Image (tube, rainbow, N blue to C red; front, side):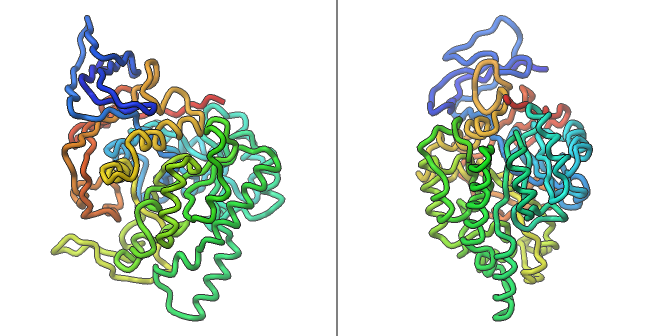
Length: 459
């Protein structure tokens, strides 16, 4: 393993910005100081003019392996992740088969160990009838990120809507419980009522999966968590109304109930359905503009704790789109809303998107690092990651703030081959990404010779 000395970088870490050198040795951060000289051989990197950040940790991705690998797989999507400055990910259980047994879960960890370029963890799945398997996760507190409950519609039999099952899980689970909160009964009622009135389009998605659908389910999850003292993390908050359920009066490390916001809910609004249609169909839905404004406010005042992607790739055909052979642009060739799959590929551009908002003056770069690295590590109690600290694993990202990049089909690394951000020009770009001290991404090139590590947790 090489020893690297990153010289003259502009370090962004723990609320501070300062110039310093950073020494990487044996996969860890050996030293951070104003001027480091070594008596041993190093590979020196001149980081003058570059930002030096801790690698991002994405707590919600869908990499589709096993069983759905025509859309994506752990190798392709983790490659996209590291190219985007994401050095660790936590992946969801709705694969095929879903991770509903400890054996199936460990099979995913085996795939990760063989193919993931970033560090990895996988959520245990829940259903109405796998309680005993879920409880075995209590014995793996230090090696599994948590369990996932789909309290709204999902793939296969992962929906948990039996109140007795929910009570048992919330009362018995000793690890973090992550929830997808949408009230299934309300969704079905809204869909049926609207279908009787009109032919549905993507613009109807936030009407069918409206604010009340999300609020009722999130409120229910919080009631369970408060009743049993559970550690609850509610994923992809998308409405202004839900924000009243969360607080910024408690330090993150003391919170029992935390919340995530995703980059697409901070970027798109329902006004974008007219142009993008099913390309931005996702669950929970992208909603009216006042929700986006409220999410930003709550992110900045710490009612929302972490930023993630909910990276969920589908093929263009599954979205009802195709790529024009002449122009290369995405063109709708089937506007059937009901059959279009829900989800967006985002992990390659989440950090760049947030850095765009830094450039726009919407958020500070220190806050971006807090919400995409520090807070995720604190929220999940991840061991020795999420910060630039001596002794921590060297998950480090170098960003060039002077050189932009435009998203095109040619520089996408997703297996699905498309992005809702195509044509977007970002004012900054990822220069280099280190994972455990290994230079896995540099100036557009990938070194896949060394794989990431299984995340460990301080529990």
